[in-house]
Image 1 (cartoon, helix red, strand yellow):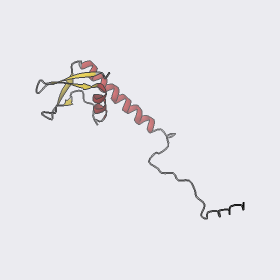
Image 2 (cartoon, rainbow, N blue to C red):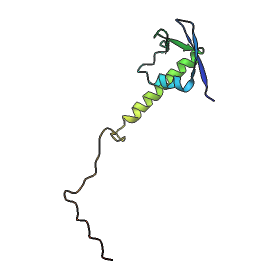
Image 3 (spheres, one colour):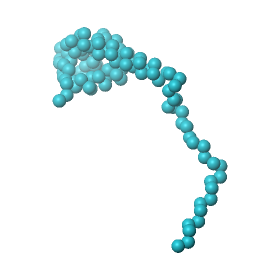
Image 4 (cartoon, helix red, strand yellow):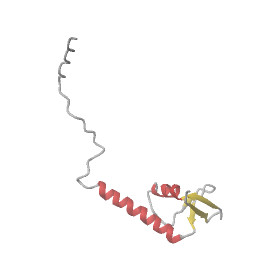
Length: 104
């Protein structure tokens, strides 16, 4: 069963339930982690939706921010290969001839 989170929008007073994984995915897609910016209210377009537990919200954003920073540090290490660079194996300039099949 999916764990659901109740979000309340401050501007309209509406409440919605959203799957924890979906909310986590939305938060990870954000470029900033300002705890004062909540979930986007689909009715108004304003970022006014927050879970009831404010401490959980702040720790959630902090955890994601730390994970992103750790991932950035790990990919910046010199031992990590450059995945943007295409490496092609060397091919001989002239291919060897194909041998004739043996007579039966």
